[in-house]
Image (cartoon, rainbow, N blue to C red; front, side):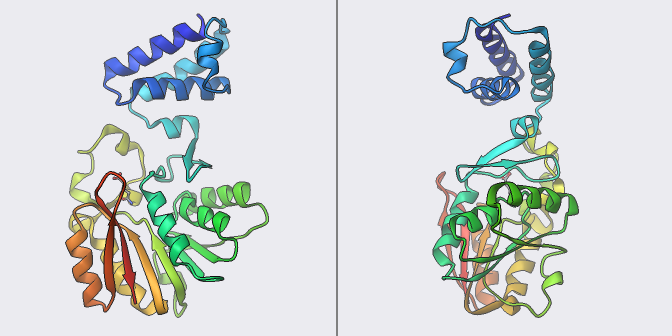
Length: 276
Ligand code: GLN
């Protein structure tokens, strides 16, 4: 079988199963397995594949046909133009979270002490330190497995630039500590929707996605506890669900914050800025 043939066949199989971007996913899987650039799918389409290569591609395609996200199959996901290693212990970084990073780069003063809560793969913290080496970045997660991967990503991407990784539940390990900037993409999806969303979501860690009370429990806790963990004029940046706009305004203002919410590129309310 040639590269062109397997490419066409794979895209068709993914399409027939109802995969949303069959062509793109097929391209990503094949180029990842063969470790080739994407243009080769066209320029080398008559290249005959070995049995081993066909088998390796088939193994990955079967995983995608069961709706496993492409990023878990290839083990990588690009975020802010940087390649992160991902696995089933962490949420796959989403493009809309890049807006949260943009805001953090904007709000972080020179040398600011920054905390990234629920760091997962480390995407936010690592990109922040990468873009702004002057920042003193702390990153924490409740999941030890996630932290292990975040540390690996930090070492690969940042080299000698260091992030302070801390294991623990939200602010518990930071008793008495204050930051200039707190950022978080916490679990905010309504727990009642677990198992009812796209099949791909079922492969991601539930603890990274779902929260009680229509997804607001953890967001509420972070806002309330940030009051004691922000320096004067400190800022809390939170990624939120598109229907949590009013809730975040209400809780934030009750805690004495000035709240503003930015829409993501798809036009949904996504990043809340809470100023002390
Ligand atoms: N944006 C993600 C989604 O809709 C949720 C991320 C999160 O809960 N922090 O799948």
